[in-house]
Length: 192
Image (tube, rainbow, N blue to C red):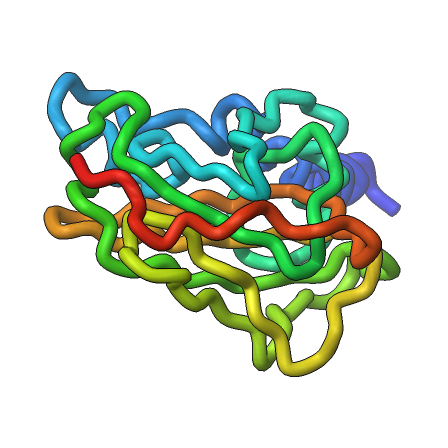
């Protein structure tokens, strides 16, 4: 093999590593001083709480690489520190770096990706038959419903929060446990 062919081959093999984003780059808000800060839709303009736990930024680069090595098509920028119920309740409020971007909450949707047992090759699809239903006012809690019981393990929950003004998305790394009880229902919800 000629030296130029070997050099080109080594360069081609290294290209995917060069194009890989860090967790910080993947999850950065859009550079702006206006509501355009939110257009990356990676969760910086909404506050999400799951079974009483507020989501926090997934800043650990090693965990970020591990989660993103599994192809699921989502930028996972958030996590929970502790496990939650497989029948969890979630609430979302306006907040973050540009609180008025979303406005009053009208709808929350979820896609659920089980990571336990997933392999890094191939694409991971979201589970069918999983949804969120409001416990009352959309500004209150929403309960997770599933046609089949969810198993204990690591999941990515992708929440799309639709408000009166706009929408944002939070992809959250969580550990689900069927032995845990879901958070309490909030049927009235706070209005802003």
